[in-house]
Length: 387
Image (cartoon, rainbow, N blue to C red; front, side, top):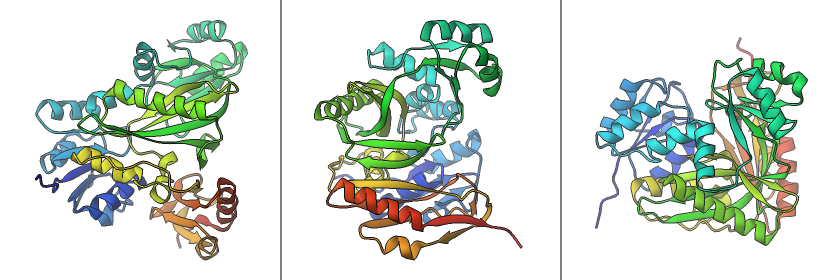
């Protein structure tokens, strides 16, 4: 009989780290976190908070020395020091090797294509001339992406025509960052599939989620997705294959496109719990956050089955206000049946900053959709100007 009292170190103390920690604490794990923001969402939950930058190699080493396993809540961190720590015998999940590949969208897509998994056609570009050649190959419009650093729509630009190539090139740094061109996939729906792999190689795959974005930021997730049984099966199998390719330990999210015939292709892979998986807290037997802690600590995986249809809505900082976060309308929001409210505790609200989310569960998806819309209309998080 093995003790589970491993100390878990988490790089990142935002809302994803916060929700990981809430599950870890239920099972009694000591937690240390590294985050540059003193009063980050995870701050009050942890045994120790190392206040340091995500690229600070010395601070990451300090965290590793105090922990039995290191994990992380987002990709934009120092992968090189994690590789060094792994080589020295420290445990990092998901592995630093998989993180380094996924951090670069070009290397990520190259590996997936090498294993014959469906991805939109793509190529590296580094000049206006190469972008024009990509336009001749892929047609217009096509997507221009920075290979590193992009999130929530940042680092993406639609190249509409040959006449706008120079404008698009300038919009993404005029070559100061590595770039890739990607053929536009004729999608009718964006979906995501969460999958988790244990240290023993077991894989648990969650139901297919249907996602709606506004301004390239996730607005709503509906589960189950409005797709055929065959497309559902194909999407879940594709997520399983992605997990095998990366040999990842922990939660991964595979974002996919679906075309009008039901074909699926991988858009991007995230080696961590994901915004589109927040619904699992209320709607699945085992949430994505509990599953991640189980996996990285060496425990058996839990049941990912859906208990009830669910809808998740993100709550962003209100437009036109910035300052100390103020939550308005929580009472009206929570008066609606089946609603759970999550407020992340970020000190400052900014326009379009992720400040919280709500989840509606119900007997039918249609009822969950309606209740989520009513609740979303009630709740606001805005910034109060400092006096």
